[in-house]
Length: 143
Length: 143
DNA sequence: ATTACTGCAAAGCATTTGCAGACTG
DNA sequence: CAGTCTGCAAATGCTTTGCAGTAAT
Image 1: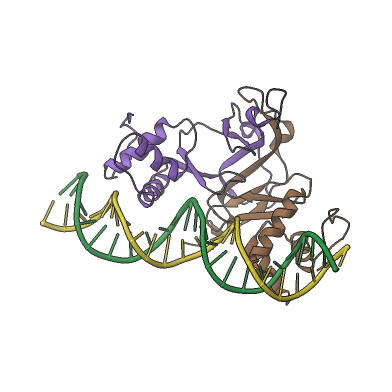
Image 2 (image 1 turned 90 degrees about the vertical axis):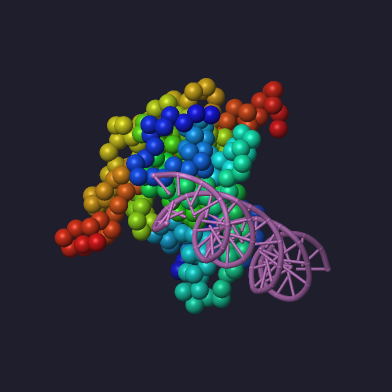
């Protein structure tokens, strides 16, 4: 698992644990919970990184604009992903909580009409929810 | 505080506590947390409804399609609102967590492109985030 | 060497669960 | 009256906090 180094934020002390969290997020195919990150670190055969440390590291990265924190509908654990600057949205399965990346974004052509017009927009979050293929009852997959 | 009765779901036993939760949601100007609902009940001078009861009642109403549960970005408590069937989205202030209702919805004209095309869409959730007027530093409100 | 970071334990807090008594239909 | 619902207490599980030893610069 490699970390491309170049996105390391300035003035942040580099430790094994922090580099590890960043590398895991860089290689993640989907947003992860803090505990997922711990689990992946262990699966890699490395020494454990404690949850409290992971939470502290994530908060630091969020503050530096490197990581995004999200709460997905109907799932109370927060998930974290690298802020890739490019836009990303997901479809969420209401049954298994799987995330599927969307390939387009409606906000590209949308101007939100806010009542008082005085809200300073920083960004948006969009989520499609429904039932994924694996959870949908079909002739192959009767439930 | 009145409950318009007519939206009471069939086959659901009517109790003081359930009617109370529904009435509070009907009269709410914004989505509420379960604990908000408890607090409003007490403010109305009524006997307390316990959080565990409120959670159980909310879950029942969600199951009946009467209530929607949402997790707002950067706020880990779930909020609940009446499912008014008309579309509703909010702008969220990252500073004070205030919610401001949006007056239009981009999804009216948007068809999400899903990778495999096999996802059965049930709905969507959109959230604009940024800084509200009250939290924005201005000449009147230096921070 | 100094300062900040991490392991670890314990606390915090929203939410869930269990159970006996109370209430609805 | 039977079965369900609620008050209450205790448990659960994610997340935060405190502290002392460890590691980075």
